[in-house]
Image (cartoon, rainbow, N blue to C red):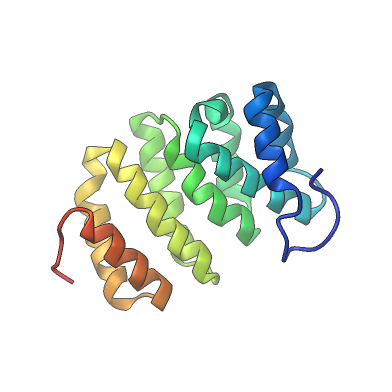
Length: 168
């Protein structure tokens, strides 16, 4: 269902999401596709997994370890920007939170503005479940809101507004 076309289209990714919602065991096939040889399939699988994680992150919980590994190793921008928000939605241990925060900090140096913007969101979401990370993340978001790309500055303003932070 994820084959064909090019990277400008999500193809049938939304149908895959609907399939997983009706047959939760199909999530294993979506996760498996994140390692497919075809970069279009990987991208669409990441899109589907991200959409699943918005509503039912628990379906991806058992794949936490391989997703963390993929997050570390992938250089494909579409995987990076999706993993940047998928993984922080999972239940993570304190050491996993620190590891993911380090990875996301590295994503902030990516050439892709979308990866950077999603890394900001991921750091924010991670800080929600990890109180020790909050001060560092908030300060980093403040900084990126002043110095980042237009998309990063906009995302930063949205995130900081959630805590009533007007110190931009």
